[in-house]
Length: 415
Image: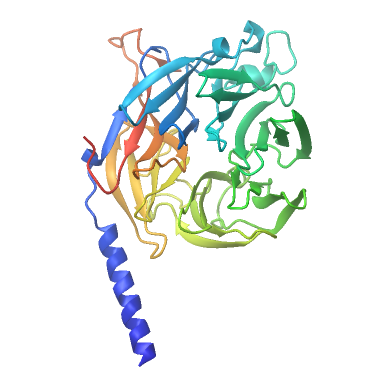
């Protein structure tokens, strides 16, 4: 009898989750919000975060050369505002130019924002130690109460900062540098900085993330999880690499994780790799924890399963994972960017929206969700230039490139 009841309850659960996945989603659930006051802006890259203390979204927007606009989107008044330009706010000199913010924007318990800056273009790679080359990235702090940008210094000369994380309990920041992939610990309260050495080589893995206990994770060049266990103050390396499709090229393996989203109801952290695998990571306070393979980001017979480009991931209040596939010339449908929904319990997935690349070409941003269940991405659209293209439109190489913020609620239409 108990066995029959158990099967009955499982059946109800699967029925309800499948019905939840069938909720209609249209473009009425999505808003594109422009950035005012910076007409030459052409890009963003993962530099977005939600501040629960101020109920606002912060984004770094760049011209991919030497100017970064720092924006605040207030949920209270539905307004996007340019707070200023990083070089002016942080009192940088001309030789200290910064190309973009590549890190997430993260927050401490008081609502102060932190991020790192990046060279952002070939001048960094080819003129590393040169009078007109790149001097190195800075860690910045934004105090929203005083509306003050504070330069916390340069962790390493000639190195960009690719990502940043925070232990909310202690306030200690974790950072990874580029191109040498040094793993940095920095305490803003004491100005103490520790370099734990290089964790990767070649193409630097892009994402750091933390667990429920404040431990920090990265991947090494073999795509093994590397964990900084804060209580023991040491690095642990998983014995095995993260799951990957058998034909995945090495250049995709070494790039590691491109997105993550934390389940607010559990300690589970969902991951997406550069090889287009979706994973469920079940961390433990001590040791590495268990990794569960949820399969491909997109099931396709037209191209290899490792190929889709997914530099983003979010989780809705409905428990579904949402991610946008496309960018850098890599699309699962020709000329089209797709918004995907994945049920991590049943592993069922579907396309919920499609956009031509002239409307949305790519999106970044990880685990950005406000108190009302809205999800956020940093997007942009691109289209080729021609003789009729106004010179005033921002561009990257031979294409017009226009950035904007994406606001998405899977459970209701947005006004």
